[in-house]
Amino acid sequence: MARQDNRDREERDSEFVDKLVHINRVAKVVKGGRRFGFAALVVVGDQKGRVGFGHGKAREVPEAIRKATEAAKRTMIRVPLREGRTLHHDVEGRHGAGKVMMRAAPAGTGIIAGGPMRAVFETLGVQDVVAKSTGTSNPYNMVRATFEALKKEDSPRSVAARRGLKVSTIQARRRDTDDAAAAPSEG
Image 1 (cartoon, helix red, strand yellow):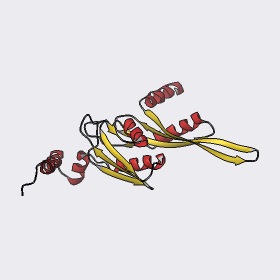
Image 2 (tube, rainbow, N blue to C red):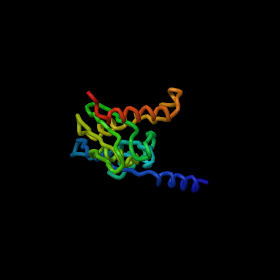
Image 3 (cartoon, one colour):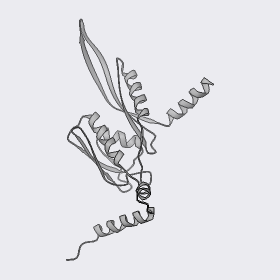
Image 4 (tube, helix red, strand yellow):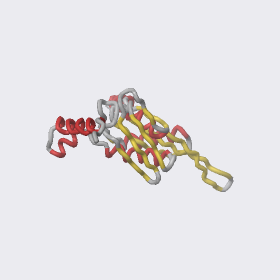
């Protein structure tokens, strides 16, 4: 029975893609020299709208990465995606001094984002997005700010359920505002 559980866990793990975002070597000064440790930041996702990040510390790099990956799998969030390739709407997030801005993009745009944010989008399964980070280049704060923004992401279906409307009504309003913005004003 234990062998069957282990095989199921491995199959479940294989659906996830993990990306190492940052590794930091830290030193503890002790009598007789320095002891080195490693801190790893890992982003894990299934490329279908679920993503999580984790932080692990250990004396060896592989062990730190393993711990970070385990932590990332425990803290996964689900993000609604439009057509499975981009965000539903523009969104901003911040954590500490890290500020990020993300915009939905038309098909074929690709992932236009810097290092840590790019890792989050690749593991999330987003193919088209334009993103900008300002404030700090600290990967920990950038990843946390990205997750804060992704938590604010809402799908038309959830908005419709919350307001007691039909999805088509909400999307019709969106098209009306898009048409009004695209048409030049007469005056």
